[in-house]
Length: 404
Image (cartoon, rainbow, N blue to C red; front, side, top):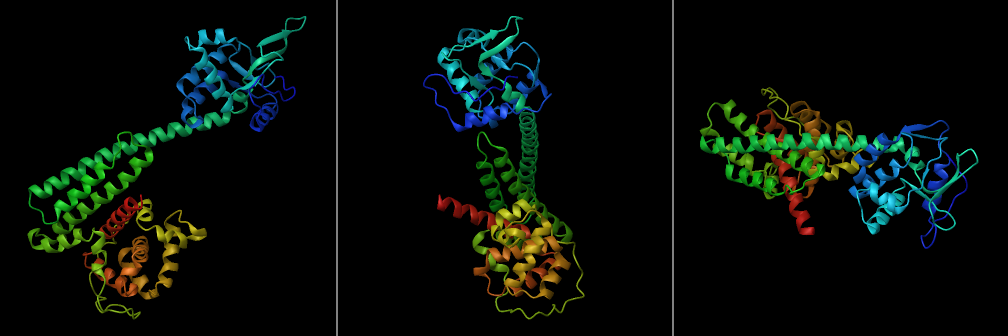
């Protein structure tokens, strides 16, 4: 390619430092580098939204590349094309002149091409006696060769995001169906529980799905929908284990009502203080550990715990459990109380319980006694983290709407 010196645009077009950097970078392409121009174009097309391009911009880029005679862009080749606006208009399917100029400017702005203007602004090539192009003025397409790997990476990212979005939408559709049918079956067959409240939560989640959802929208609602599904299954499983649905109505009604923010602290012992001693019923039959919920959901419900993680952030369950140990000490929960919670609930669930306690610290007079009481309930199969997390999620949603 012809590196030459940095050139400035013709006429009233301004020169910017960004244009200088692009021209310098284009002159430093690795020797021998080559790329298929149509492969690069397909990658740019795939990544058009990330690049800020429109469909017409791609039509213009396609037209420009068609004026480059070879299929391969090479570092040692002449990479300036010099078609007139009339020629470009024809190859860009009759695009209007003003639209053509706008999209040429957009391609320059996004760094996919560089203007190499002549003294009078005309586009042409000067050839030597052998008929080889000695110098050319028009549009330098060498940035496409320079950024070929970057464009390929962006295209792969877009493809991965599209696949993730498709899978998330599929999971959300299935989860919606499952929750809807589980609620209907529970109501029709007379299962105990506040199914009206549960259905209200379900309808609220559905109403939050926008007409054109993003991956973030779908992922967020999917997490909460899966949490609601787990809670419904938990209620039905506990009733099934007890062997008599009707006799457990009051217990399960209290269970689902605890998903309301204002009733979050009902589990707290009214007068028991933290003593550091284990409960007397050590010989109780141990239940399976409390179900663990997605870490993303936990951090959305309990954002305060994040600042106690390594480096002020939580990137995984190991960080979560590390932060819980710090918070446990800060809240005055004895090591024995936390250890017992870990043994009964599981380490991850015990850490989530501590995160929930931290989030509602102002409503809990004795964090240690609170955790011990939850541990005893968990050992009897009477406690689930779901209502606590749902309460915090719903409370956070109310606060967010009020703040807006």
